[in-house]
Structure formats: C-alpha cells, structure tokens
Length: 183
Image 1 (cartoon, rainbow, N blue to C red):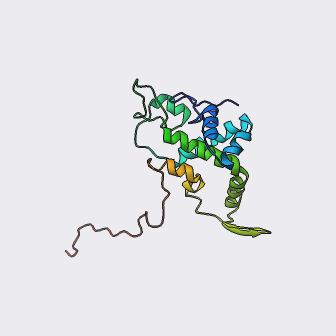
Image 2 (cartoon, rainbow, N blue to C red; image 1 turned 45 degrees about the vertical axis):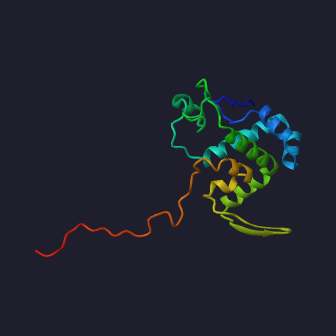
Image 3 (cartoon, rainbow, N blue to C red; image 1 turned 180 degrees about the horizontal axis):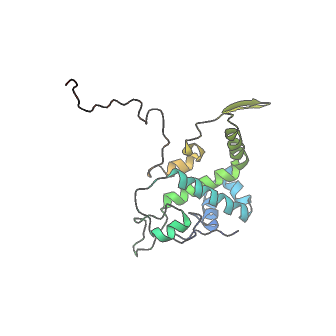
C-alpha cells in the first residue's frame, strides 16, 4: 500500500506522511504514541488515510482548492488556494497535520470499537446493554463525534460541517400573496 501525502498532488490520499507522524509520536508521551510506535507501517498508512477521509468529511471550506483539476482527482479539501508557502508552493496547514496525527492514533487505538459502533448504527441500535458493557450512541449525523478530541481541538479554527438539526431547519412557514380578498 502506498500513501500519497504530497500537497496538491493528484491522487493525494493523506494529509500526513508516516515519517512525519512517527516524528510527532516520538515527541509525544502516552499510550496513543506508544501504540503508534508499535504499529506496522501498513497499519499506520491505513490509519492516516482513514483519518484524512474523516477530517475531510468534517471540515468545510469556502476557499477554492489550490489546483481544482488535481484536487478533483484526490478529493481532498487541503491545500486550499490560501495554503501556500513564501514561494507559492502548496502546503498542508500545520493544524491539519496535527489533527490528522491525532485522528490516526485515535483510529489505530479504537478501530474495532468505531467499526462496531457503525455496525450497531446500521442495525439501528442506538442504545444497548451486553454483559459488562452498556452504551448509547450520539446522533449518527454528527461527524465530529467520530473525531478524536485532539483532532477537534486542532480543527477548531476551520469551519466544520454541521448536520441539519431540528432547530436549524424551517419549522413553519406562512406565505402571503398580498391578495386582500373580495371583488
């Protein structure tokens, strides 16, 4: 499996390379970074690709993409037209790289739990109890509930997609044609 994390490249499928994620893990302390260090390279690539897809689904951007033709092939929101270095070359914002690392370590540690939650959601089991385990699920439309707390922190400066809620839609409508009536 190959990972393409070149900013602005057609076919890019990750916001972070394994080497960069390894460096972030080496600078961190805790079970997430320990788990990252112990994982196989292929699993790290899968986690980075999935983290990128989940971040891409949760972030919305009104800025045009750096190269709309190439980005159409990769389907990544970043880099945007404003994400360039001093020489004008495309870059991935550092906060997005950090969020990708946080999300990838979260996925690596919790993939089985996240996938089981998806299965329960597909079966319309919003709450359940099993021996030694009970759970309830958040609204399935809330994409950011799938994001790691660290990833949400780093993405706070970006516009997140929001699902429709009962309060955000139109609850009632009264139209008037201006017709007073009578003849």
